Image (tube, rainbow, N blue to C red; front, side):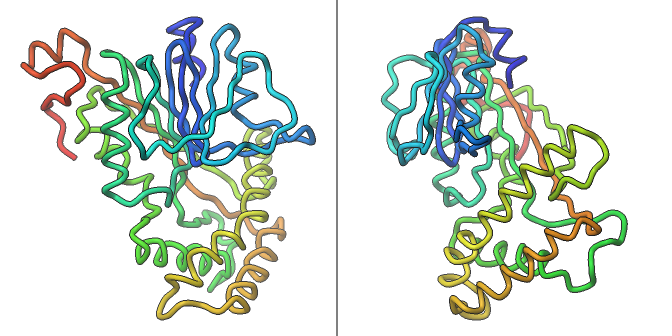
Amino acid sequence: MLPILHIYGPKLIPIVTCSAWCWTQTRRIHYSTPLCGSRRKSSTSAQAEAAGPSTIRGVDLFPPPIDWLPPNCIMEVDDVLKDWTWKTSFDLIHLRQMVGAFTPKEWDGVFDQCYRNLEPGGWIEQLEVDPHIVCTDNSLPANSYAVQFADAIIKAAQQANQPIDTVETMRGRMIRAGFVDIHEKKYNWPMGPWPRDPLLKEAGRLHYHQWMHGMEGWAMYYLTKWGTPSPWSTDEVQVLVAKARNELKDGRIHMWQYAKRVWARKPTREEIIAAGSPLGVPIKDEYSP
């Protein structure tokens, strides 16, 4: 994200995440604020430190549980499904880890708002993780409990009309909203600190803690309401979560998830006018969903 930010220099950017954020003077949107370190510092504030003279404005449904913010980081409580009321348009909008946040119809509305609130020529970027669990070295046991957990959540989310296949749908939604110049990149995301590569080891450590601390909440929300073939009991959820956690703790098991980053551009003012569309309204392009 930051290299794109540096192109625009010291601007204001909003960000939207499952906890939504914003950076401003170029603006950007980001929807998820995982905590890191003993100071309970969110990744939003960490980005603010790295962003230099830019201002980062974080937006979430609830006040973030953090103890300290850098001077250029502002947190707001808001709901991005409502009409956006920021008076400044954005040059960059970033969304991350939004799986299960919206219904398909709500997703279309979010991307439409992103398009309308970007400056012509501005960029949108989204990073999501594939909910499926994979293993490439046969270390994952047959009938893995972690895989059973993931599969159960995927089915329940579909039943809830909050599908978590965002990693596969975000590109098409950007295109339908009117964005052009689409790019994407795929990443391996280990579910534990077992890789030898230092960067993957750190990513795996963070992802491991996200899973260990988040599994029960995810499962209770989805499986007790929309579990198949019928809603699960609390005891059934806790048993599966405990078994899946034991697999995650086993360093001999090398589980992965895939992450994908997609970024795209709003047409420039000249491109929009040439296409005969009013500014802020999506134009037709050569891409197909």
